Length: 481
Ligand code: ADP
Ligand code: GLC
Image 1 (cartoon, rainbow, N blue to C red):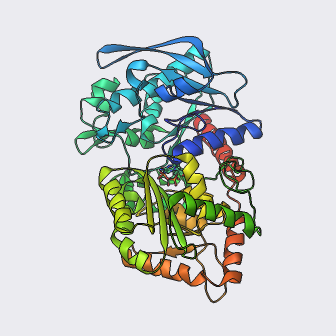
Image 2: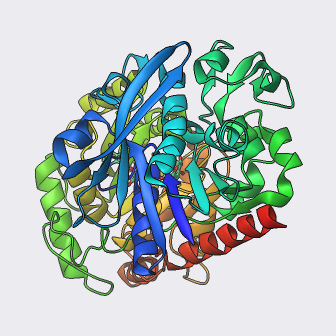
Image 3: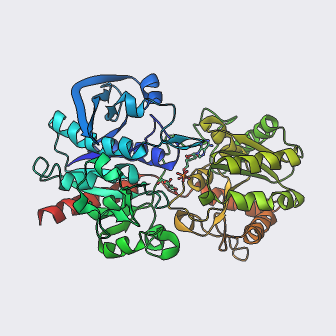
């Protein structure tokens, strides 16, 4: 079976969030399993500047919205594993960011990702590659299944598509003019097609035209069928319910392992409190936080309404009053950035806020904190809590999506669990969970058990990769039968 994973980001090349981790780790796991799988992504300027690549000699010239966009196909050098292809088009992707700047999304994102989706199919044709499955991810590749079934049907009769929803809160919704930009006929522009309240919805195309649909945790697969989580697509998903599966993400333990992480002050594993203590001490020093005995909470997050940053900022002064210290690393909406820098200014030596996307600091936070805070309003899967568990940092999180599927709420009576969950999306519910977590602080035996049990959880990619392979087979069977 030949798999092509089309994605707008993937480690080690480029990452702005969990999608990057997931696409990169999944293809690496396939390689370990000897599955023929490759990645294809846009050639952003940062990748072009930093990776060992070569041209494939395949031009990608596509007419979009009346003008011709010219690019070509690149690939990772032979030695680099696993195989990755890159769609080069400097006019569309040679920019400092992936999707936009702090001033907002790039205004031509419809064009950029429609081009990318078509270019993936043109690249396959140019390489004479007929993938059995093209695995699409999020709205950026939403049009691909439509193009495949329409524009490219004759060339790829046997190729099937699986579309993964990483976050239904981002759908790629554009004005009606996006239709002609993307070269899609008006006959698709109706409520049963890709029209969405008078506009064009790229993710809806992915949901309608892919052979199978997955999302990144079993709980989220149920949640998105409901109005409160579906962002208006719950009806479309309801109609495709039988083709919708929840496959829990994993993390790559070769990348995320406190025993081998070169970025942290000392290596450690379950049952080895010494190394973790050294990491904690180093983090306190780096952030200038006082009172080494105060429980230390960490946040590593995109700053968007999804992540519950407003709950944190509403509660922050009271939390400091409870005696804890907080380290926050994040980047995103200016509004949240200002809230958190303000909070750190009000609470010097107690709250440290760094605005930016810094993988190395993120690692030191995962390793150095006692608790990891993730009060998301919704969370399709969440990787932060999986990394925190592995690094012995006890998650305090909202009981939703993948957080609910990966954290076992601590039961004080039985003395078992791996974290602390709360239900209501309110500062007071979050504070109650934090207070429960704080009870653990000072009860060292109990705390050790929670930390150790969390570190021993297995969220490796082995199981999810197997689940995807089974679904690829199912997609092929469906298309053939
Ligand atoms: P999402 O994809 O919704 O942003 P996830 O929890 O699935 O959330 O994945 C986030 C990934 O991005 C994790 O690997 C996390 O460590 C990383 N990350 C998020 N924000 C930052 C940041 N400011 N600096 C470094 N890494 C970050
Ligand atoms: C999205 C979701 C996050 C998930 C990630 C990878 O960014 O917000 O919950 O872990 O995709 O699937």
